[in-house]
Length: 149
Image 1 (cartoon, rainbow, N blue to C red):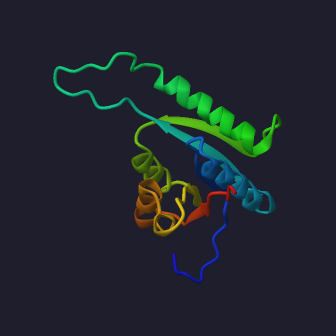
Image 2 (cartoon, rainbow, N blue to C red):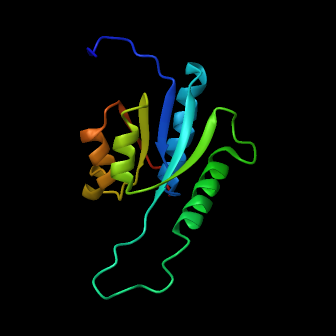
């Protein structure tokens, strides 16, 4: 698609990890979606930690349950008790970079939060945001985290 072509935005995926930045990204995506009559998918990822030869960590279960709780809490924090009709929460197993880049093949936009750390570190994107900006198959919007005094 050429840079000057108009593209309908019908599906926006937001990477949600429970951080204030991802909640802000979810709200921002909804603000874009409403006038476009687009759907928003709040997407959280989970995976099992790597297990090394001969070492098995105790208590390495229920990652999907906890990730689902974090996703539900983030959606509630973004929108309150009444989730908008155009917002869907989805939980996928896998590393966020891989999952979001794969999802970008079938969506119109990715929206991600950026957790700045102030000073020089605040100028840097996180690893997931950087990977998506570099490798996504659709436009990527990186939303700054809200300022906390």
